[in-house]
Image (cartoon, rainbow, N blue to C red; front, side, top):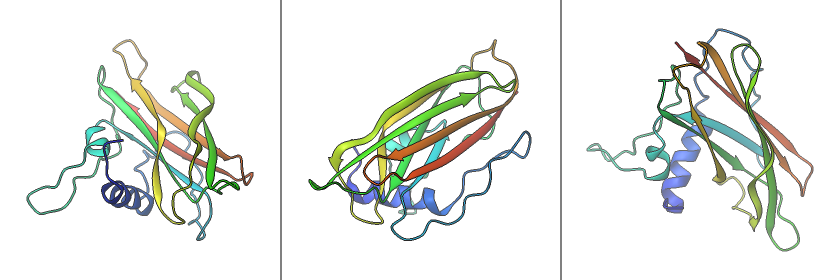
Length: 176
């Protein structure tokens, strides 16, 4: 990963503090309650600005530009979903064992993505408590010109295999 720990931490903390923009059409996700300290939690960001996540740069004001969640998806342009997590439970060796299921749902209810048990942070050193870590998988989405208009949803459910905890995050965007 090209981000140093400080940059990743600042960006990821901002993601956990500001909920993703969700269009009010279709069925919105249930609002998430604030996480208790030390509680396993994930956040999903679907953006058309992936470089702001993997290669953040400071602006003239000295602040890092944050990738914005996509609300209206452009056709034939790459969108990338990033899963951030915090507070996975380390095993006896100090490693986390976290995987993620990802589903992409089209406006009519059909699936455009359905992956199970993808490696989010498997057998890797546990980040410090409260530290927000960018997970391994990048979810790549391209809406083609033939794809239907409407609300698309991406749902991520992460499983902490060491603690048995589960966390869910959802993002949605419009296609016109």
